[in-house]
Image (cartoon, rainbow, N blue to C red; front, side):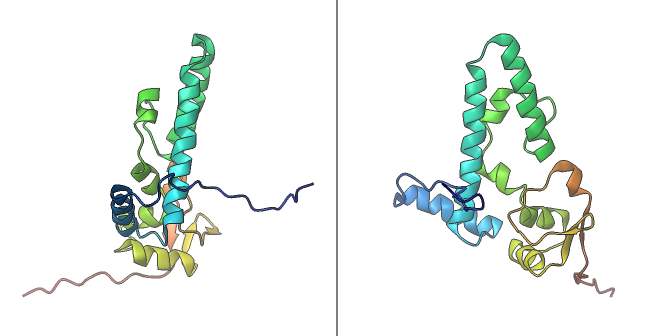
Length: 166
């Protein structure tokens, strides 16, 4: 029998890890989003694969079931902040790994202007200075939903550059 608390792998690595074009794309994404290692990128890729797999399976359903399941999937992805409210399955199938990486707490802090770089955002999160509502979040890979985006706050004051008046 298996242990209930047994950690399971949440990601699947690339099938051909040593292809030059894949390595270059991964390296660019690592730098752009301030990821610690490629595993964080592979986790986002695995999430994207599961979302696409679910959308493709919905396409094969009968009309009334298809509409119901499509609405459920799109509402979930809308709450996550990945698609717009009036999206279709084509929009879901058009998602990229960058769309998921933009919803990480680390990237959201940079886009809100709380941190200047993704690396500074990561440091603020890991050191425990970032709160969502009343809850401290110390995981840079936390996916921020639309409703949580307005509740993000940083308790550590970040120095803003002072403009000199001459």
